[in-house]
Length: 221
Length: 57
Length: 249
Image 1 (cartoon, rainbow over the protein chains, first blue to last red):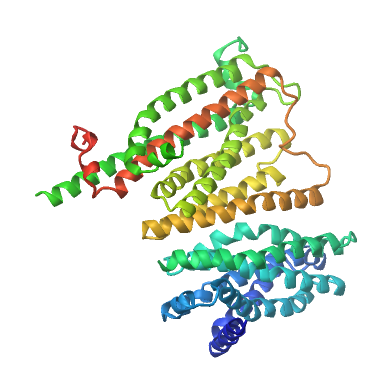
Image 2: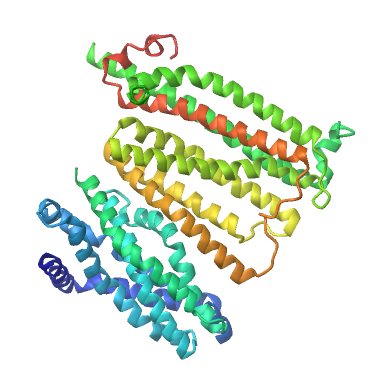
């Protein structure tokens, strides 16, 4: 367990040294959220309608942007091999890296989304559900994305390739995440959506470090 | 026989474009796939021949 | 029995087996296609609601089925490959992918051409078509990943992992798309509601499905032989092959 926390702390420290890399994902989210109204028009009713979907897709794409960073830097300087060879269970170490990645890339999106939701004239309970759905959904994105990042380690066309691999797998999270806010808006209640998001989160957090370790071993051979 | 004439057959009750568009695309893609597989096989054989001539000049 | 399977797991022996099989499979596929098209276009009657336009199902439904079956086959070979570390498993998965992608595309294309005269739009966001679209993306992802990695063995294993992860996700994706579809469209039309099948229509569809299945077996056998030659080009047995020395230039 100590190794887990040590790794999370280390990754967080490294991330804070490279603030630009980290913040670029967040700024991307902000920019994308602004692009849609510019493209579609400022009419409040339309924006309220598309808002949850736009923000969810924006969060998804912003998460994708920061994924290559998850293993790339460690791989380049050799520390990834040390992690793989260490006596600690690789799954635990990978989970540590994923947690650190989410804290730095996913959690800011969760915090920022309600603010951006105001730009889409979303009511306050929708903002709350948006934040909750992203809170449950972004860790899943980090977990599944990590598998993609591990598989494409050092491969040409890395970033786009990871997106192509991983975006189809995100569809269920997207459907239920954005759907939760929609359901709340239309008065149907989002309890089912939230339960399903939770049901997707728990197995993913459990299984993805295992798949990710397999992927890392494949990549490092 | 279902069809009175060839032109009836191509017309397909007004749905000709859609039915033949589907059948046509299917035929084209599968033929292209077969051709591509054949060409790849020929290229592979040429590769082996090249290896051979490289190792036994 | 196990010994027989592992015997054919060696590329050298599988090459011979596949070489003997594919011409027969191709001939059978052709025969089934002719039979299926005959039943579908010459014998089967027009549909009460859809007229002659329904005949697209003779390629649409088989293509959809094959795109799903092939992906399952890819997942199967991937599991086998990662478990037993056999070279042939990776080759089988790679050989299956292009055919699966083509069938997925055909399913979408024919689906659109079916939808336009029936429902008025070129694309319908119903659960089946949307899931098929995502399946197409999964195929593209596999092909992109295996093409991007230079080291063949690493590419095989990475592809195997993504194929397995994809296969596990397919039911989840289908379920979530179905949910999304019913929420947003309510009781709307769907391409999954097939016309009440006359016997001949069903037979035509089944024959075409069988034809596509046998075709897949034939082309995969053929493709695997090419992959074997490419990967084993340094070995004596490949260099001694009659095709290499023969007049085929």
